[in-house]
Length: 189
Image (cartoon, rainbow, N blue to C red; front, side, top):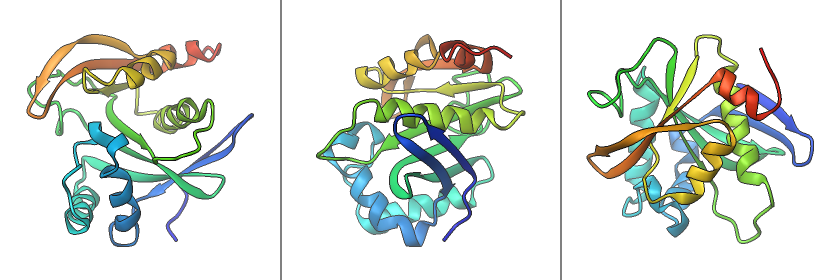
């Protein structure tokens, strides 16, 4: 089992933690998540198991892109990736500043949704990113049609800068500073 890199306790929902993705060991689980109809915005709907393992092996070898399996009370429940926007995803579209970190997250599909779960996952992701003092601002590029994630992003402090055209989608380029995130929690630095 991989080492846990970050843990936080949500007062209502319990423990959330992150560990690095193990491409070989986690491929089947991740395949079931990223190809599920609810993960349409993850853009891996047509991938087979081998393609998913290859993608996460590629990420594991990339010094500018990292993938983490998120656990809720010890059970795999979400995926988080972070990347350097000066080198991946937004090159030529976003002028990355020192301290910028790009992020994606995906909750596992479920037939029994838990109220507040996705917001708790996103809060965990944001806390994990800002636990690194080098990260000053989180940059995201969600699909412009993904209204559910836009609402969640706003709840944790993201501000939409503009709509950008990426090879696979039109996206809302959005950012959230550490101070913006803390303000949504009633905290200050």
